[in-house]
Image 1 (cartoon, rainbow, N blue to C red):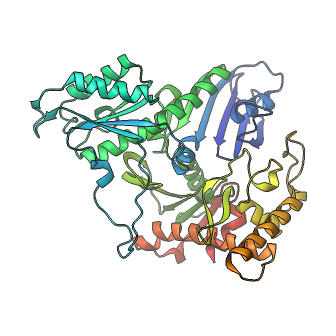
Image 2: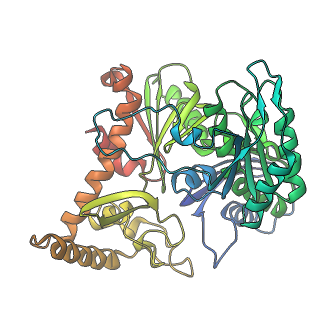
Image 3: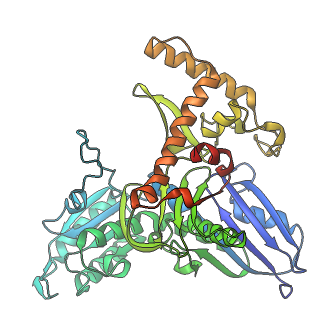
Length: 460
């Protein structure tokens, strides 16, 4: 019993939102809907709660939510435009980073895209003991902030040399940014108060890049719900109040909840050595468990370094909604995702071909067994005909570009699926075999909307 109040547990993914509710009389109810469907509702979590409650006016005691809003924004590089303010002489420090080369023998090195849109040097300097060597030049700092604000930037990340020892200059730069009108101000001594300017700066930029998107989402949900407590899952596997939910702690919000659930369900079935395979609509998250939760404090997600406590989960941009295309003379899957709007081609919203469409094409996803929640009215089944037509068009395009005979739509779908499965299998190798674990003694625990469709292929 829930003391006369509703309780809701929500997983808001990039493509689907899943809602589990406990009614005031103790009944468990589940509901699933597209994360984005602008013609029918503004937010899937709020709509899911409304659908389940119907006209029930009894209060909501708590809403606990895991969300991939921040994860997907990072994977798809759709965060806020950020101004980086860094000590004079270090403008290119985060671009240089630690000069690591993940693939040592690669001749053409592609650096990950920088998250900040603009960088400005701050005339100031502290020594290694935190004492002021060069006082902050407020006039120059204000001018740099004003120029960025005039250019339309509203988020600023401030990371100054030795600012973790004495944040006096960072605090003042933050105050100037607030006076000018920046709505998101991330100061490195608040975000990650530790030595190493590169890690501290990267984490601060991530926080400034994602927090505005997260704040808009949290405010939207909080404004639409009248509930006792609104809690969000953090990357470290713990819940926090909505008002304290920050960008740097939200990267693995959804996946961390999945990992906790994975361990509880597997242990109930008698398994304690697990490889987690969580495939959703936008990304696939893989994890290793051998009796204890593995956490990391410095990690890299989608090519972005950050320092924040989080579950040790490896994320790749390969999900059911990952876009399949022929580009630069080769088949490519992701990292772009069709999301829920427009979604895959089979969703009847004019979307591109995706991994989900490959499964429809090959018959591993049967439209007859899927709920009729697609199309503009949200009442139609998956469209298998448009998938076949689109794959046939793409086969003709590939044949024309390569001079090879046209391939069948099924063959095209198999090719894209093989690429997606290789990406996911490589991710599992990275967190298991490459760390010295013998995976032959492990159980592959698959979950997520698309996990079951691909688990056997990944295992093979």
